[in-house]
Length: 270
Image (cartoon, rainbow, N blue to C red; front, side, top):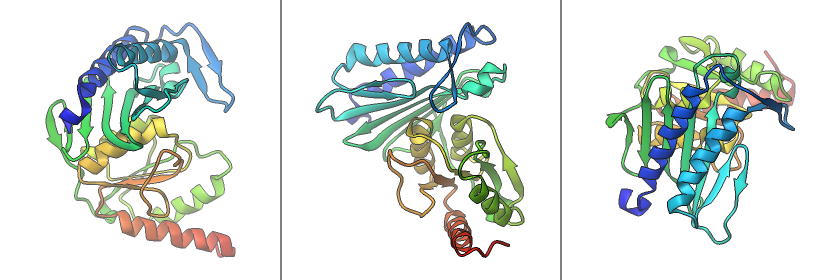
């Protein structure tokens, strides 16, 4: 698979590390914060990091398409597509919380074939390529073997939205079935990388975007876990909801979620 990537793995890792350097150098030194149309925030540091990543990719792979959280760089007829979140955890970063990372995924003909997550403050570089496993700083990693009763659950941090009622009712159904009811890190890169290396076991999200989760999804799958939408179907770039798990508990969680969704539709909420 690395041969198939034709050096894109090296460029992706270089881009993540150099963007991480910008992130650390500008910590608590933000000059500009803007509000986007969806109400989320973007800083001058996000944009600086995006520019660094895009420049590194374009230097060698000008024929590749790029989709970043802040901008899109379409290329007609491109087979490769980079999917980037230059600063995952912007709202943490704004408040001086260093739970932040860089997420870079690569798709070939719409299939994710490479995922990179870099957590610069802890110098953790996660890498996965299709069919070749997941690695943290060069060492192979695996999801946990915890049962649902032993599970640490990471839950969607955007609880106040149009799906709030569904989210809270799902959580109510799960609260007595898992060990640790809920963790919220404010960074999808952090959450999914923890599942990939077995530090957490389950994440349920409702409102993420593809640049948030594409790299992490491949990391989890290549580490032996499972990643689907809420109906149990394989995810794609149009997903906003998903369940990420160690695989062992996945079907059990799907059953709880989907049975409860039916209860909501019928008005039978307990």
